[in-house]
Figure 1 (tube, rainbow, N blue to C red):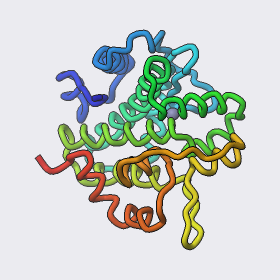
Figure 2: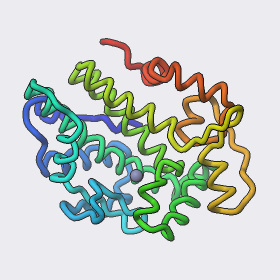
Figure 3: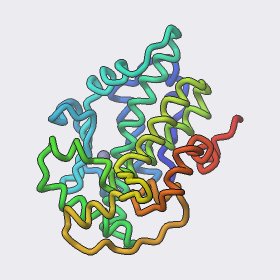
Length: 254
Ligand SMILES: [Zn+2]
């Protein structure tokens, strides 16, 4: 699965001109085509997403909404650079980040409907639950949900790949890598020798059900999904997360 495909003209624009709506449409349609999931995008709407959201994907109507002006405004809050090209690159990366996040949701929607993996059954459960939550409550707790963590992690990973391929700036790379690490560690509550995962919290307090046993292959995937983790491994990621992100995503200098 690759969400980081840039047409040559977009790659060229990346550090020179802020993307416009047409660029965004091309990018979205290229990725949807690459993923082979045309049925999971019924339309792209510009502007209003409501509640100050930058972009949204509706799992039921399958409509993607993008508020480009809001995304650009938000990006400008985060990054100060004297270098105009780097500033433009940062804004464009922020645009791509917001869109890729929603496209990961579109892919999840496909997987929920057309595959039989347990992880997508869990996501379906969460998405149904979230329908009953108010926006404010959801925005406060969204990193508690596996489907959101998955979108947050994958979108940041893809942006790091794009930075390595097209921008190659340490400050910008570090910014997005730090965001990624923060998201992976968020949602867990540490109490001395134990750490409570988002999965455990949700099943105990939101779904009122027994916590299912989940299979995970490594620390990285465990944190990505918000699954139970040993405190020693949680601390290990806190300490070595920067290296683990580079290693997992093959982000070595080219
Ligand atoms: Zn999301």
